[in-house]
Image (cartoon, rainbow, N blue to C red; front, side):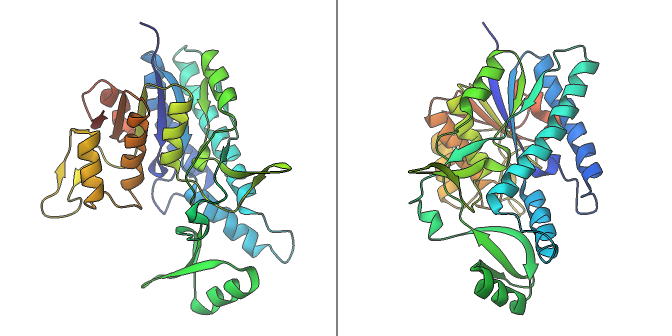
Length: 313
């Protein structure tokens, strides 16, 4: 039996270890810790592709652009998606390459700046829901709406925040490059932050100001590159029902039907576990073998069936 291919979706907790540790050096140190766990998978014989979140980093860049707008041009959101993909991909490929080299393993790790085609008629473009960037006062928010046409929503006790469309991911443009690198024996980092959303036009592809959900994009990537396994690395060891409530209960395993029922019942919120469960469902219904949700420290054990929440067809 040959190597099995796995996609690991790296959650934000693997990049930013709390609000006091947000500097670039802090982020790199957190990535280095996760890289050790990813190296475990390579050492165990898995063909590995990684995706990652970029939400906080997008917020930081938006803030920098806002503060500097009187001195230099502002940066469009699709370019910010690309910038954060490149920077985080660089850190992951360096940290993971170093971890593999120390173990005398093949240290070829490549980050691919990835575009993802979305439908220009996706309903998300008419109903933006994805919050990005910092909170604003009401006066600031109304100025942004008037001057820049932003969509803003109010969150009680925190202020106003910009929301952008979050369309469903479609074709991954650089899938061929990711697949070719994996076939050649490299570890690949792709679809960072869900990928750069682009739409087809008469003149070719064009970036749009939107954010694609990283977990749904990870499921699409796993299917498009022929991965048998998909792992969502997050801040908890297992998926729980009644999370944070009096009847909280961790789940060792779920079928797709059970996952659908719990998702429909509201057990998995849209802003946290929901996209992971939805991504797992789509991956398994598309032909995937196994999806797992677990914390970084349990990645290898979860693939062995010893930890995490395993979701099966």
